[in-house]
Image (cartoon, rainbow over all chains, first blue to last red; front, side, top):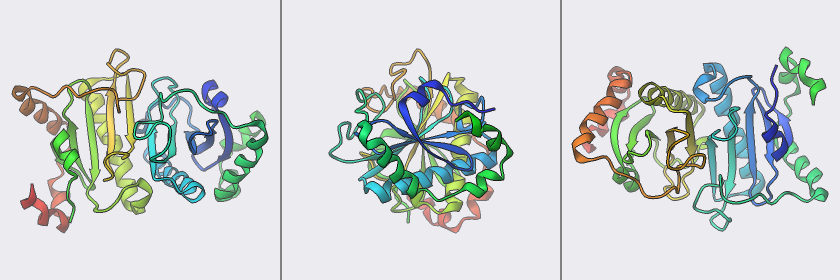
Length: 152
Length: 152
């Protein structure tokens, strides 16, 4: 049974669920910033996933990158799997601009987040949701996900 | 024809070449820090690689992680593909310790490197080389690599 880490839950808005990962939007309007969390309990490192899941992960990283590129046309995508503070494996996919607050440094540790206003959360979430392909069928084929639906 | 970016060349020691990536060791004795550079000209982002290369990349990321884990037993592996300063796609794989200089922050932008002493470079390179599987046969099966050997 997969349980999302408290800190990830508190800092993000949920966008969708892909075959491997839950897709979260970092609640920081300073950057278009997605977080992929593979729904595998007890995994801290990419190399701890099995080969099939690693392939899913890199494809989902590429998908999240393309979504950010399509919606925001950033100058660069930054990808990172750190986990020094939150051990549950999660991968950041962040659109960067040469004019953003942290450029050319990394976004991690670059100061406090600027949360989205309450009034814009629904629309930003909807914007991202529409950009991800509908994968309900693929999700339904995975028994683990079905057992989990009540928890959200 | 793949040409390694000048900055990556200047900051690292070459360890080996895998099926997709050149494996470099960051010349910073503060962290066990490998850099994978896919030998594909003109690629800046992971999602720009084709699917086959993305799968190779995630497997090589996992391999580099296991090598660092085996040699250094770090508390955590950090993986990052940033490229804000060096546009050529490259992936950092870094062993982290709760007692290291930058913990729990990222290593990128965490101050100047502490280069390995001249006297220890050969042994550290050898240590890493021995930890990677021998892949000469796989390299020989790729015509692109053969044309390149004179350039190193």
